[in-house]
Length: 386
Image (cartoon, rainbow, N blue to C red; front, side, top):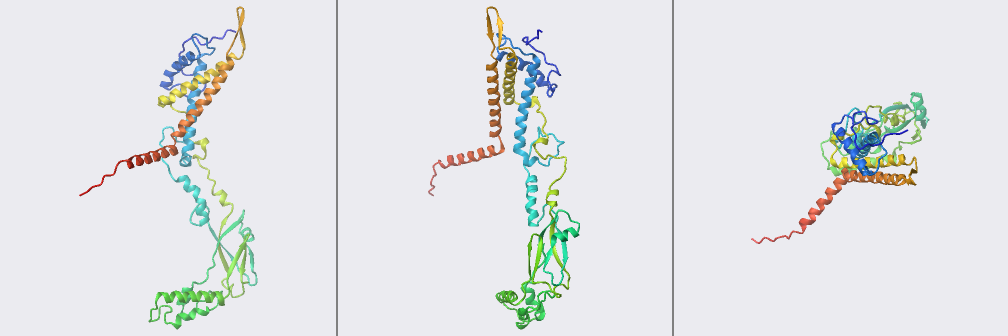
């Protein structure tokens, strides 16, 4: 079977490439045959025959452009992923100017706000337990089951706070009892003795005196009254001291909690937005918008791909019989050269993109600023004498 090879010229028409990504790009149509001529001559034509057809050249040209776009947009995604997350996937970012924003950073920080109880995406709920005289320990996990809460709860706050000493100081006759949970504070009578209690006295004492009285009340409460407190281990709350009938008159112990499963479920939002590099809305590049720097890289990568294809073609036969001797083909040379050139071109373009990243550009600008400052410091300082 006599398969025709490259005759020395070609004529591109839409449909000649495997995918047709750029077939109707006017500039691609104009360059396709030029690239074919360039590659064929670099491979030795017309001195040597090139065992390829124009379709092979077009396929390599299309692949080179797509590879260039993949490298470019993969770098764009890496450089802007924090700003891209949450953007609609329906948009096309090829010609978009991406402005940095705090959207993703704030979303990541919501977990800290949730822990601090100042916001975030985890809802805080309130609940209450019925206190029982003589019962010191209460299982909040069992309480959650009784409330049909699955996945468990995490207690964030128990609403217990001693009466502030200043309230006891201004209570009439010192009657600052905590609903039966603390008795009558022994030091509360300070409010009546010194004529400075509950706003009804006629004598204003210095602020330093009030501060000393407050400290005295707090110390008195610590020493003389019961130390009402609690302890939580594994959602089991222990009340100190053991509640009695007076402590349970109001009946409830209030607390604040979150549902454990909401830590995960509230962080999973199904949207039609960018969630990872694979759905960032970058398509194939527009060939006619690629500048000369990019096109030169594409031409060289097309040549490397064609060398690789030609090496595989010539590898079908290691030698070709000619009159009186055999001719050895250069398959090995073509394949090794193609592999090395492709790798070098990929490394070159990645280095170029890395040098033009936001981080590198800001570092270079900072260095330039330092260099200018050093240069200005070398200017002699004149002394003005009036």
